[in-house]
Amino acid sequence: MSTDIEIARTAKIQPIANIAEKTLGLPSDDLNYYGKYKAKVPLKYINEEKIKSSKLILVSAISPTPAGEGKTTTSVGLTEGLNRIGKKAMVVLREPSLGPVFGMKGGAAGGGYSQVIPMEDINLHFTGDFSAVEKAHNLLAALIDNNIQNKKYSLNIDPRTITFKRVMDMNDRALRDNVIGLGGTGNGVPRESGFDITAASEIMAILCLSNSLMHLKEKLGNIFIGFTYDKTPIYARDLKAQGAMAILLKDAIMPNLVQTMEGNPAIIHGGPFANIAQGTNTILATKMGLSLADWVVTEAGFGFDLGGEKFLDIKCQYGGLKPAAVVLVATIRALKYHGGIPVTDLKTPNAPAVHKGFPNLEKHIENAAQFGLTPIVALNHFVWDSEEEINAVKDKCAEMGVRFAICKHWAEGGKGAEELANLVVDATEKSPSNYKALYEWEWPVVKKIETIAKQIYGAMGVEFGPKAHADLKKIEKLGLGHLPICIAKTQYSFTDDPTRVGRATDFTITIREIEIAAGAGFLVPIAGDMMRMPGLPAVPAAEGMDIDENGIIVGLS
Image (cartoon, rainbow, N blue to C red; front, side, top):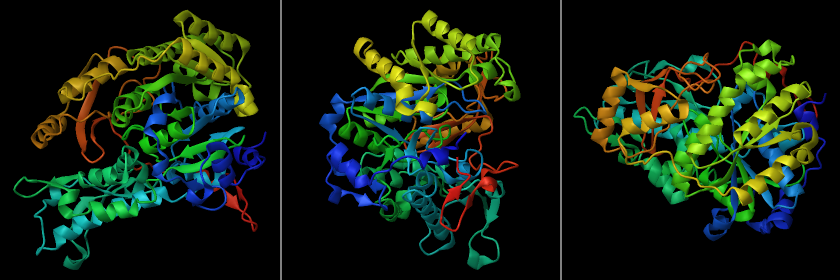
């Protein structure tokens, strides 16, 4: 069987100028090129009137498993399928992070015959957006420590109150916690700090939730840094940092245009974590897609309870977006995993285990309904799936009154997703979206957290630890209680315990602290231990990658 990178190389890639001019009607001279096959599109091509008439399709999934469910592959395949049935469609996705590419994942540009290309470029540096976010973030970190060191112009910042770490786009557990400023007075004031991965940076979240360059600059200035010794709050604007940071992001803010394997346009822009941040591409990329195409397929990270909820309660509210339909990706192996089968046995036919895993799918379907949306279930097909197992899922969806499609886009490209594409079109015509947010932003913080935990996760209640109670008081003191909620918890479970798969009952969500992302514009309640700087696995994906004398990369998948 060919690898993803080998399949990607079989595509007849077109110069991106051709895609822009012939498919989208964009003057090629207006694009900012990064070689022949990648370009940035100026923000002037966002058309708010056109956006109103275009249809936005959200692709989410049931609770993730270690095997992966294939949301990105399904998003690309659905886009190919829509174009094959005569719709002008575009996929809009997040950018891959180098850390996971070289660590666990090996790549994030789709798979099989449903990929965005050039695959190697997209996974490795791309157009430098992650680097720009990293530099802007670390500039602010340097300005903070410089202000503490410089007594003449000091803002009197209390170093003990600073939670703003530095970032790097690589998995490196050794950088999680460290002490900076050692080596004498000339090297700064010693204090505890560390590194997060760039995808977890608040700057990345700001980039993804900005509506313009000036809006981006304003949000950068709103980043909460800490307090002075006399308890006065300090923001990035107090350090006059926002202008310089925005300079570093002036190109990164423009969406990136590439293409699918079947020659359809694709936008890839922004890459925030789906638990710490809202887990979807930028508002600007989504709006650009809706301006240039009639149908836009986009993806939210992890399961519907995490990425889907945040897409609908945070991104759509900030961007004034309204999804026309939701696709829930499921796999036979994921349902068996949620039915209690270990990863090693997921390829063995086991219809009873599929039935045991149904409650997880049911809960995600119910959750979509709470937003006024009836999802289409897309069963991402694998060769070892048995007919009995497939029919079990099909019958369950019929019982619940939801549309169901078997998707073979990995092996067949757009042809394998035509059934799903037709169902999506049918759903938008016969089951119009009644999208509504789950909660009002003006509600008290505790009520908003409890609403998500009880209604989306199915928790009996929420417990707040001592640090969380102190954070609630700080939030009220700062006047930030009106911000939306971005709960950070494990993606593998509705609970805060990753081992409780399926559809857990009789559980309580424990919030140990609440981080303030005032620049991005949301609050981050932390449930359990959330990793903001992943480590490499025992056998990193990097060990299987290589490059030859002709510059041909192997092992990237």
